[in-house]
Length: 327
Image 1 (spheres, helix red, strand yellow):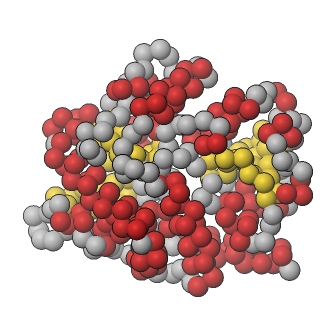
Image 2: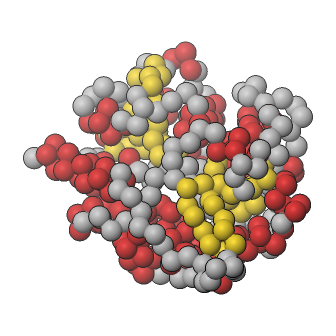
């Protein structure tokens, strides 16, 4: 019975995630400035603050007409750095790597104050401490990107030798791989797979990266060209988004209702799961002042990536971000 319930919930979740997004309310008039924001993922409840800001006209108030560009793109910061895109949602570690490759990208608004990567196992596996991962098979979506960086940071902080863990690439099949016993643990997105598993009735253990280290996570990215030539535009985008984020934190039920109109195919059972995702997300977003960067987190991110020899010594943490547009 538990297996059937898990399959049903997973199928419903996939149906929602693969669904399109209806056009949201946009600018107020033909002279609104068109702005594209690349989301780096498909329509999802985790973008609720953006949907709220659009639907309640906060971008329109700034004279902006917003298009959300979805897709699992691996070259987002390449596009932002070459000014093919002006704005994207991306992770801080990717900004460090891009800047190290001389791409003039800059992080202008902190959204996630916690790095949403965790290592998950079923409770029955007996993995209750990081050291229990020695000799075990750990699944990872890929050997690049934020999830892999998160794993490397976790392993370093808890003293895990990579040679003592069997790391296997499993794509985005973490839930199925755990339930079917193909891996002992999996590197997961903290706002996705753990909630799926708990909703399906599984008891799990999870090691959350932010309990061990402070890496910069998702936020709003632009480029130096836009900051220099159109600082007012950056300020408008940041201000409108922060209004949506504040509304979401203050009244998540009303915000979720907006997301349900955006992802109209969400049925009641899937909605319960997605509402749980939103609730979990709030603790990753809520920190005062909203949107502000933590200099110490940027210093730690740079130091960590340098220790891994993923970047050289020429990256200065202060060049990666600015609080100019959120103060």
